[in-house]
Length: 126
Image (tube, helix red, strand yellow):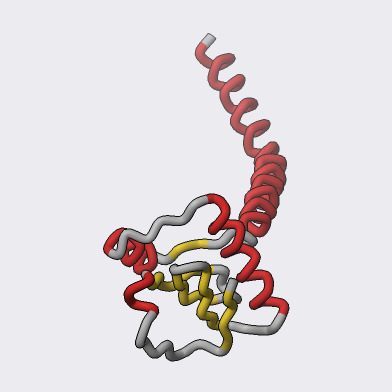
């Protein structure tokens, strides 16, 4: 009986090893799904850790309307070929990498006045 069990195990191992290419195909299919999901999320605006820290420090909060405006500003900047932008929405300012869809830092109302902004190639004021 032990011989039969060993032979059955060998057969299962051989069959399993023959099925590995199918597993790889499934993995690549899953990878394609993950890649598509990542690419579809690529349109979302991200905030760098520095931007989040500055928002907390300066008590800058965004409501739903302002988030929509920020997305609109990114689209306008992208259409004009701007890479690094100063985006002004009301009394809030954002320095953003348009091509990376990332807010780099935030500026509160009191920091907007009498300030110089460098390393930008455009501004969007909404």
